[in-house]
Image 1: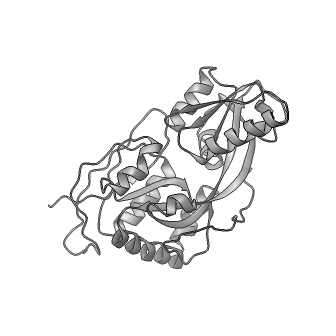
Image 2 (image 1 turned 30 degrees about the vertical axis):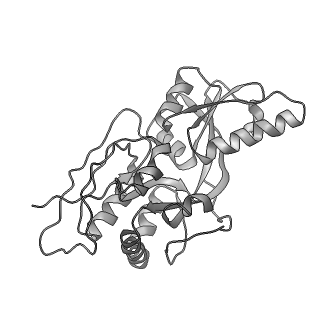
Image 3 (image 1 turned 90 degrees about the vertical axis):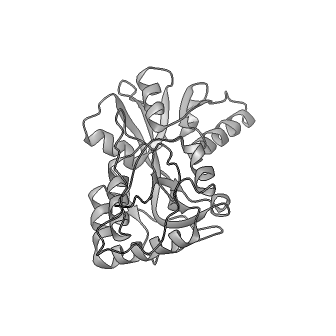
Length: 271
């Protein structure tokens, strides 16, 4: 069976890597696009992303393969043609949309996690004035934390000691090890880990800074094929079923490659 490649660059999952062999589906299923052969990077994966990736791949008559990579390398890898699809709750920004083909499909928010012993009320990253705060390298999380720190300095207050880590797994491990006093992660990821029984942290703030998220592609043909897949999933209810399972916010569609600014999404609060 001829090997084909559809790779989903994803982030998260403490401790384990999930790898799926990448093969063409049976001959009765005809892929709508031909994927080039290339060396796949490594990609960490989180449960919801895996299921979304599986559903998209199946409808393209393909199977996904997951490895690990750092967030900051994802767009360059897609532009180089070394990955076909980035599926990592990636925040949509006009700058990113000018570099790769992005399909907005959902919205994510950020959560601030602190050690369980910290019972303080926390309303934003400003709380960490003079403290250590962890974010993932190359993310909007980092930019928001840095801006908050700069605003504090302008107001004559101590800066936030913003520390960056390669992956969310590293961010959380830094919190466990006491290297930082708090961290930014996605609200959905925080809820996911909490519901799985992870108990070393407290969700001090959730639903912060709602932001459109998108799938990203280096190839226009593949992106347009996925547009149709997402529309089909919305029409048959499978997209809603998947996202509701995780309390995740999704956009109403239709789904299409988008450039330029987008309005702030409206999402229900996640408790």
